[in-house]
Length: 98
Image (cartoon, rainbow, N blue to C red; front, side):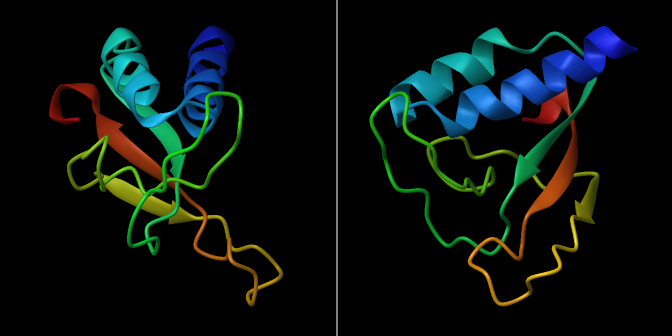
């Protein structure tokens, strides 16, 4: 179970720190489990491109990733509701649907 959790955490970190083309490659190469939970920011209207190594908040349902609707969306409930990251959530997806 620890290995699965580590893969999930690392995948989320990798996607947030990759440029759009690199993020698409990571998504394809990382399909190792049947279900995955990944951090997502569902209120973001678009994902800006970055240089690989920078960080960005991603709405995984927007381009370039275009994930399907998650099975479940679990809001992180950050205490600072007025921050730009107040929509941070964990999305649960079936790998075959993303």
